[in-house]
Length: 196
Image 1 (cartoon, rainbow, N blue to C red):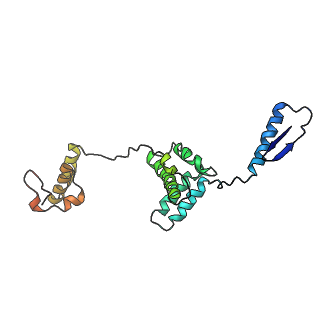
Image 2: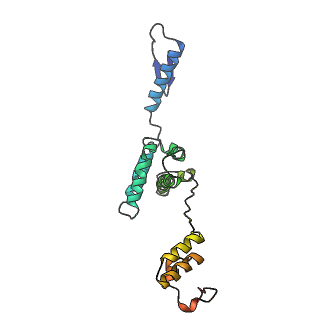
Image 3: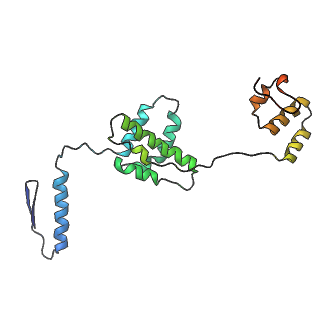
């Protein structure tokens, strides 16, 4: 078998009994070795964890550092040793079944922020963060007491001011601070005027 690549002439004698497929496999391996050793003037490959680590260094000492490091620790194995071009696809497929969509989004957002930081810092030529989607979240926590539950709560309260407080909060949906800040001149017989 013989071939030439980048000015390098390669001649190898294969052992007896070698097939055409063996010769082709050897040629491919040798071409890769020669091509891999060539300096093509390209930047060295950037790995996912290099970008993540650089971003974590940049936020060191900030208020967000501790939770961000926790999220980064969880998603790091997904991007460890992977070229940066593959990271958005890997992170987009990251979806551990035991985690809620909100938690997965925190992990994904950590990588998105790192990629965005790398782009802004000139370490990447493309903003790869835009290629990472977030999962839909249904984390609404609306619970409303039934009229019977409100009645039971009111029956259990002896203090008339506390009863009025709970009744106003339940009937209007006002928050605690809003109810506490009410003045007597704002409360009418059939309405509450918050504008004065």
